[in-house]
Image (cartoon, rainbow, N blue to C red; front, top):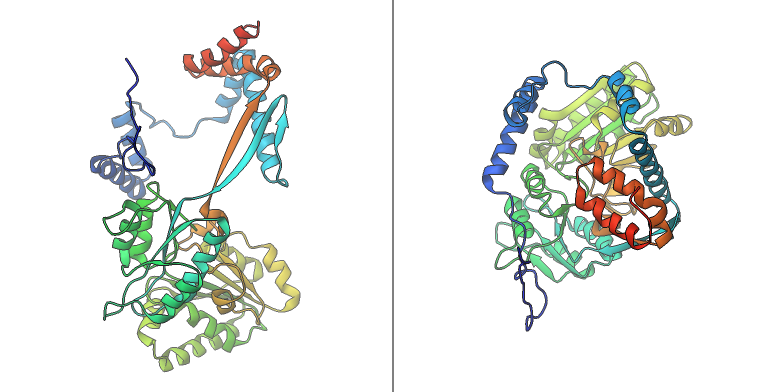
Length: 437
């Protein structure tokens, strides 16, 4: 079958709209996958077993996990050249992964050189919440790392006010950050416009910025069509771990700070001191009663305002790590802060001591306030320049490297049933006067 011709003579870039593309999974695929995931989430193993029988035509009801003894037996059964090739591949993969964490530079081993290339995405879409409040600081937080990464084209979406306008402070922040492309749209529709493109909104490569539950879910659904930076930054969250010396007024106001953003977030107090729990809870009640944003505060606190009493500091940190909050405040005595900080495993950002409220991080501390929410801090981090970059490895090899390593490649490719993969190296070995074995 001849290769398909794509003749671009006389065509000027960009070629985005004229190049053929793989078909996007249709709605039937998306709906089918969504239904499978729903079944697994609600039914667990029973759904996995049923779907395996339906789609893979295999019965796994006898147990889903492979017995470790079977693994050891398999290792003993495989042909010696297969085991040797697997072990060689693993050693080399491990060595390169370790090199990635080292200072910049080429990785060279056994005649193969890997050069690490870093490139910015071509176009970034930023989202700053609006509606009930305005967030010019979010514009700055999203734009600065994109600029540092070297992104050349940046678009900003902001929900307009009731008059259809974007407020002056937000537009001023966009101007300071050098953003001239601002769209007065918000919600899931803004995320869709950025991801798919419309006649008015050219599509982007990466979307960054926090939003409400609808915005977060929209980003979740377009992930894969575009990159979604900083996991799925959604409604605001805080866990305040308060020791016996914590100032109740400070702990209370810091809980209220995040609840002030509105519904669907969470505000947790975790302490091993019953007196602190009572004092902070009373102070929160007083602040809420006097607040002009009382409705937003109550919307969060009624659904996810928690005061958690535990046996000690270790248990408090276990609770915090389980919640994996967007903001974690360690309001403990100076002598205890280092020990608790060492126990942090999952949090978007940590604020240590009574003089480091999360509000510092929201505006001027320096690190980003676009943070992972809804437990995504288990695997995600604050927005940073790297979220707007791509990492590409460029591999070069010597003839001697092919002589030495090529037979292992042939073995692994044949083991996986990929004859063309094996042949691509075998032909080179033959050209060098060697063999595939």
